[in-house]
Length: 314
Image (cartoon, rainbow, N blue to C red; front, side, top):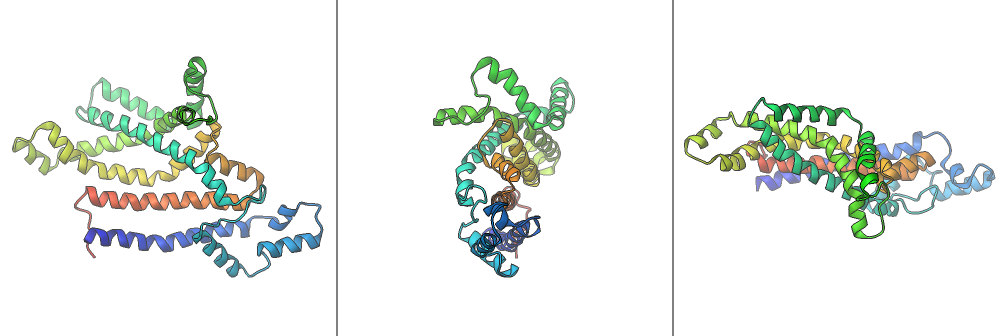
């Protein structure tokens, strides 16, 4: 029951944070130079047309009223209309989000499939050739920019073999998957070094704990000790590290989508910035902020489930 209360408190704490985020996103329109109504009707429109559009957009009302309207609209899923296309921003995001979600999901899956075995392998010995090779690859993955890694994968794999497209998303579900593999590998290469290093150090630290020594003394097998005692307790710091780096991960997804010409949220926010489409920028920014808050919330819940030392009492 205490864990349910813990989750409930985290949800309650997230509400004022989300309201503050909506306020900051709303202020983007207020502090951006220029008249949004003039941007909609064009530079050659008359003053009467500009005044009419300002009234239609609600820009002639007090700022507090505008904010409350925006806040209630966000709660209903209404993020306004695009200045450029005239389409609902929520619909634009809904069209692009599956591509970004697929990229993030596949990239994280690949990184986990690589980082967990590598972290376990390199934690068995503090030295050796394998540890040196992995450390070198970690430094390379952290130092090299993601767009450069993506270009290299295109030049080395996509163009010579033709197995994967160099850009775009394709038409069929099979084409979608093939189009996401190289971008997902690029994302995994940039994320895996942090996960490997964090998990490896946590494993090394956890293996020195008294409860692990006791398990070995009682005759628990090495594999069972690793699964039930070491990995479970070593995973919590890695989950927290991932939550702290979610902003970097989202920025990386924006860069990778631009590199591979994927029609996802990242490419959408770049296009909106070029066009000075303020409602679209607000919508994409709000989406990224909500994702970060949700990831933090999920990380807290996962850490509470993994680590019994997390206090969930009132």
